[in-house]
Image 1: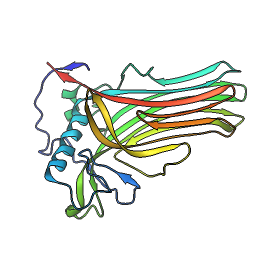
Image 2 (image 1 turned 60 degrees about the vertical axis):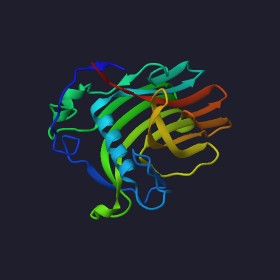
Image 3 (image 1 turned 90 degrees about the vertical axis):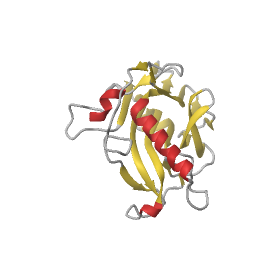
Image 4 (image 1 turned 30 degrees about the vertical axis):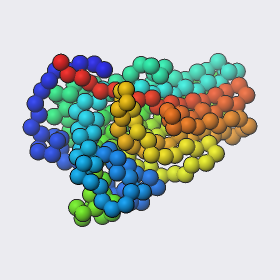
Length: 259
């Protein structure tokens, strides 16, 4: 965790320098606010969970440095291995790398309009003949106000959320997919759990015993015989066939600390 200079930001009185977009999450299979209120909970979120969702949303926007995440795909006959992210121990930092104190004027000060998304992208594509291997990490976190129903009715407001961290790795041959793996983390997702898919509510760790509530889906598949392995502890998707493999893993968030 890097150290940043302390600062004060007036923003616009809501904890951010912008008005977060509104999203109706009622149509998603699973959703969970950053305060831990989810679609299977009855009634309305407590004030404590509403407050925690705002606290965690502000933590993500102002203090996020990056993620510990890995995507690797390999094809042995062509000696190709594509890698994105890190080895699972190093932090991949946001890009553009705006310091916390600079985020009051957007994550890209030279864009018009200003960009308030927390972004990171790393991709490697390799090719040998008909063999292609790909690994990609794409982070585009946008802070949003979540509603269980129409966004025009504030009684439907359930808390703040964020989207999305997407990690993919694949091996193809002649346009056909030999192995494909994916890990996605967001405040709202659709899908089902089953063979080759793990899908559930998830707490994203960022330190010893601390985490932020979200939803995770890990999926693995192949067009030939192989072994799909998925887990949410941590979110991992792997597929291994004869001569090739594909693996994605999401480990944790990383935040700035202050001097």
